[in-house]
Length: 107
Image 1 (cartoon, rainbow, N blue to C red):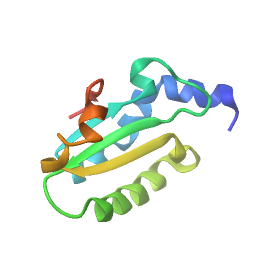
Image 2: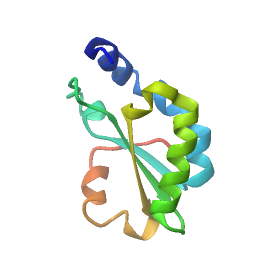
Image 3: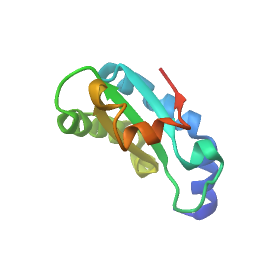
Image 4: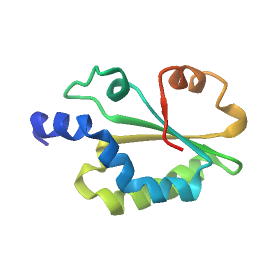
């Protein structure tokens, strides 16, 4: 992907997240975006960091399911999303607590 196109898509991160919001809502109880798209430090190697909080279950299993659906929805730009999945009881622990310091809650 051309760096200019990548940066343009990252600056419009809300559209990327909104495109997969129904999928994220189906699996998570909370969702946050954090990292360079929030702090305004987007580079050619940046991505959209998403933290999906689940109420129970295996985070790895949920991540696999979410990524399959997200890839179907986004196609060739799926690599712009970096989705992390964590149980609600662990979101206050490192490194998730650090991620949430400057995060925007989506739901």
